[in-house]
Structures are given as C-alpha cells and as structure tokens.
View 1 (tube, protein in one colour):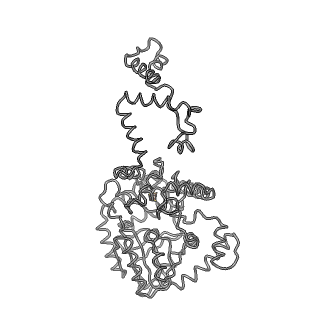
View 2 (cartoon, protein in one colour; view 1 turned 180 degrees about the vertical axis):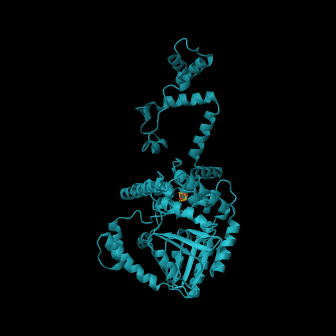
View 3 (cartoon, rainbow, N blue to C red; view 1 turned 90 degrees about the vertical axis):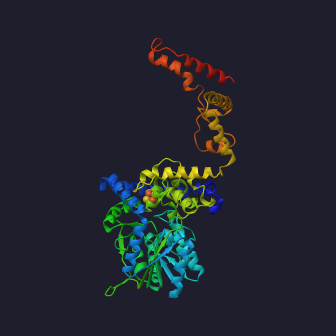
Length: 494
Ligand code: SF4
C-alpha cells in the first residue's frame, strides 16, 4: 500500500496481518518493560526528563546561534558543512561529493534523515551501490522495504523470512539459526566496509561548542562506516544540536534508556573532524550536511516548535495503542507512530499525510513516555483543527458536528435530540449498548462498545435521587426538577 491510499486503508491491511501485530506488540512490550526497569534503576526519572526538556527547549529557542557555532567548530576541526534547505538540495550535495570522488560504492549506517531524503534511491540511480550495514536496515533493504520502527527497523520480519532473504542474497541455503544468519551478514558486510568509497551516517547529536558528531549504536557498524572509507558524510537534521558536551551526559542517559532500556548503548562514538596527522584511522574528508526540509517552519510556532525537541528514541511508538496494532508501514511515512503522525504532516504540508493525526486515540500515553516531554497529543489535536479549518473534512462528519453544535447550544433542542435518539435506537439496543449499528455507526460498533442513550436522563431522575439520598423530607423538589421531568417525559413520547 502506498502513502496515497490513506491511513485507514493501510491500517486495515496491517490489521489483517496477524504475525505483524503479534511481532510489533511483543517487541514493543519488551522495549517498554526494559525501559521501565532501566529508568527505575537510574532513579529520579522525572528530574532527568525535566532536565532533558529544558536543554532541548533552550537549544531550539537559540538554534540559529548554536547552528552557526557548530558549523564554525566543524570547519575549524577540518570538516566541511553544507546547509540544505530541502531534500533535493541535500541529495545534490551528496551526489556532487560522490561524483567528485568517482565513488562506486557507499556504505551506510542507520539514519532517519537519509530515509527522509531517499538518498539510497538517488545514489542507486546514479549508478552507485549502496549497502545498509545496520543488521535491521540490511534486512529491510534486501526486502526492498522501509523501516517499520525508528529503533528496530525489521521488527515485522520473522527469522524464516530473514533466512529466505539472506539465502537469496548469498546464493547458498541457510538455516534460521540466529548465529548462522548474523554470521552471514557479518561476512558480507565486512567486504562492503573495506571496499566502500564513501560512508554515510546519521547524527544523534551535534555538539555546538566542539563541532562533534555523536552517534549511539549497538553493532559497531557506524564506526566502520565513519572510519574505513576515505570520505565520511554525515546527514543530520538541523535540530539535532546540544550546546555542550556536558549536556550530552543527560542525553546519554535519556536516549538509550528510553529507546531500548539499556543504561548505555554499546558504542557511543564522538567524531570531531576528519583524520588528523598521527591518527591511526579515520576518513580523509568529513562532510556534514545539515537539513532543514520544513523544520525551520516550526520555529517560533507556539504549538509546534517543541516537535523539534525530539531525540528519536521511539518510546512513544512502544506505548501507542494505534502503533501497537498496525506497526510502522501503515503510516506510509519515514517517521511512524505518534511522532510520525505529528512530524510528517508538519514537514510535508500537503494532503498526502494530512490524515496521519487521526491515527491516534489521544490517550496521551505518548507524551507520558516521551523523555523530553513533547505534548504529542496536544499537537495531534491542533493538527486536526488545522485540517478542519481548511474545509476538507468529509461532508458527513461536518454535518454530524453541525448537528451536535445545534443540539448542545440550547437545552430544549438538547432534550429533543436525546428524546429522539432514545426512540430511534430501540431496535438496535442490546444489553445497554448499540449492537450492529447502521450506516457510519456500523464501523464503530463492529469493533467497539457504543453505549445506548439511557432510558431516562440524570436530570429527569434527579428528584427521585434526592429523595433516596435525603428522605422524603430531606429536601424539597424544586419546580425546576419537576419541569425538567415533565419536559423529559414529554420529549420521550415525542
Ligand atoms: S517524540 Fe519523544 S518519545 Fe517519541 S521519538 Fe521523539 S523523543 Fe522519543
């Protein structure tokens, strides 16, 4: 299913895949459980979150000066900085570096920004081989798919499916044994690391005071990508900065604990400039491509600027009741889950992703899980408001809300509406709920409980309730009570 098919159609197709739903729930539960243990071990998790939020808010509020400082420091360390206003410019920068080097092959480590600008597709079109080296990304690349989780890209694949992919790639029959599969990938990728002309990585954080690029990884592949080829290109979103190395301490705790429940990732790599005289390894050239692509539009927006605080930990995905049912591909965008439902329509302001904010129950679990306290559920509501203001709401929904407004604006109309509903619902009521709803209501009642309108309203029952509570002499029934009851009963018979 493509992004053009709409979230409802894509979600429906995902819901029919039992394995996908089980796999996503199982992995999300594991990550969530590990996060809980890890944050309890750290202690004072709320204080850590508040500190993280404050640092991110300060950085984004002063992004222009931190970006200028970061670029200066990278250049002082011998690197090159390129600012790209959109995906096309970022791709052109990478292609021109590759052309200048006569590159034939590129190795990559996991990078959401490179997915965002579709760099693999453009490099391959230019005749350059691109190999993903993160194990999950490698699997997804062989399957010709996109990642379905920010942290666990191949969350939706079985071992048998991975065996089949590796068998096809290697030309020899493999088993589903984990060691065999990992051994195959290691052997294949080692050759690619050694032969590559260019390595492309993402960037978890850029440190403004030193011009350092920081990478959190677990497989060590990012270090090979960054150090073995002669040229290293870093693709980073313009918001991924921290002011100082001291600030990194907070995020070295927040990010891995929120992402995978680890106290620290296996590798925390800090790259400042290319190889210097006397260094044993490292690239001869380092290029940092800083991507805007809609991010600067959020600066100064009181409702959406905080989306730039995101550190891409994936914790909001693991707790989201919608993501847990439909997985990442149903979102049709590079960024899935609650953060994707907010970020994607903000970055790409056209109709393609305008329905993503509706992929949420607005329960607020995402905001509670977020290590930097981004109010994702508020943003989802604001994006829905924004869409409604464009007048693109379906006619049926518009009429329903119009009727709701008319009924609730006046107590007589309110009673009339509920009295009518009481009569009309009679053939559908079973055990206090509406069973087998008709028309658009059927989509709701097929999978959810829809309570029936109560036989008598609270207002109509209030006089009796007062007598029960206070006794016949405990309180006099007001004329309003009687009036309410008369009106209610009159309406009921209407
Ligand atoms: S919005 Fe928060 S929880 Fe979700 S990926 Fe970003 S930082 Fe993590």
